[in-house]
Image (cartoon, rainbow, N blue to C red; front, side, top):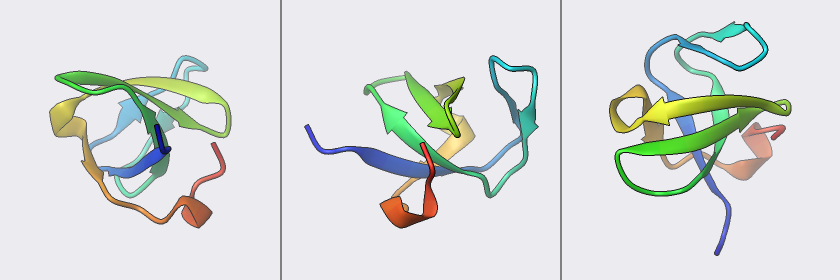
Length: 62
């Protein structure tokens, strides 16, 4: 399955404790109401309404 990418549309805390602001590019895994997203190796559990899909993979350092 090809890698999917998106952009946060609300602030989201990562597992590291860092909160990522809207506009942050993320690598997405999974489908449905919740997905796993990654930013620089940090895991962000996302709900469908917290991100928009469709970002160029060059913009993400997953």
